[in-house]
Image (cartoon, rainbow, N blue to C red; front, side, top):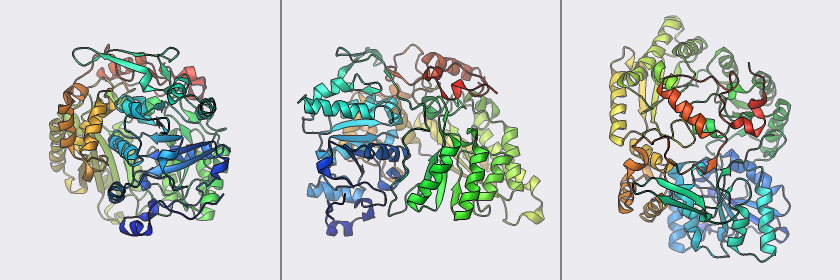
Length: 626
């Protein structure tokens, strides 16, 4: 169904702003429907700039699923960039959806995916520009239901004031039921409050207004409980166990401009068997569930046909662990080679098989290889349960250099629990050993691309909910900066220092990410103050203003030290304890203790660790052990 060629902003405005294609809609495979035939209008939002939001697979999946239902029209909206933001505020132009170009405030639902803590001020930007009251309790009957989803909703408490509803878990399972309940309540003339009470009883739904937090004098949580009858004490995540026979976007929207992930995305599995103790996704998305390889082959060809894209990538937390990977790659190499389609293969372990495959799909002269040792010493890799030995790293590097690669990217974290100066120095020493491996492996006459290039990057460790490190202390900004200085100094002392380039992440933003990741409901007032002081796009280094966050925390009588610079006792009630993500608290405590003892845990295919995810009745939990 075509609409009038009408845009929410004028040509004059479009001529003044950067990349006007972000705001005009009409992209290939975007969905237009007849409003007169629609019962529920849903606007799906990614609270960041268009190029990043359009790269998000989760929204593409939900967009396709919603629009497959005749009574629902799902549209999209992203955060306007700074230039259009200023114009919309000055001209009182309400935020609009791309497809219909109509104001978001006229929709039934505004669904916001919450992917990263430093996007929280952008959520308030979306609500404000849409002319929707920031505080959920202040919204009238005519306002959209504001619903949040995504990984950060596994601790939704810092955002509790701003959302009517959170969907905890994977969206394929309960959205149809939620929208049907909404239709029934609206047809019966029931209020917003009555609908939300019904929604709170649907599995996976969390309605913050129906829960109360009581605090101890020291600021810790004394109790957290529902305030209305029939509202569950625990909210269990929703999980799609059959990931083959479910929704997937066969016609993903194709943008007019280049985006971050400008390619067809083939999600081959969900979850991870590895159990890295710092990794939130590896715990939350358990158990591992694989898609059928024949289905994946069909999807790949169909999506390439429907989009005209010239590249396809495999998506998963650890592609090497997909059991049918060799068969799938052989198929893609043959089909994509014939069609002149590029293949991107992230999340592969650097072993002989992976390197052979990458050699076939990459221009070795132009590409670099990525290793993620995460820690500089074997001791610390055991603490974090990385499952990667120094021998394996060096063997992989040698294979890569023999195969023609001369550039290697290394990713580490600073500030991990139990870290010592020796561990930090290990980052420099491992980088040096990899460079030395190049000179030991490749004879002088074969070094056609010149010297080896090692790019060593460090980020700062941020403890996250539902990981064994959720009780850990996070370093202060000053400690992080000192660790980065020690790393740089140690690299400068290495024999192959000229072959090593060192990069590090911003320390102040990492600390604030830590505050928001493990914060409670009281942080809502902080987020609002920071937003009202002018902050948006905090995830972008050039837009981040650390002093605003520190000042707002002080004004609200709260403390950075309390939220992230103290180790939490195991018996403390955590803000997210009312959520059941599948892994039990007892399992996380065991892993926290094993980390302290520098003990490793086998991966899920080697030995079940009793994490609790087996209760979902499928995936890797029902496979025979190897």
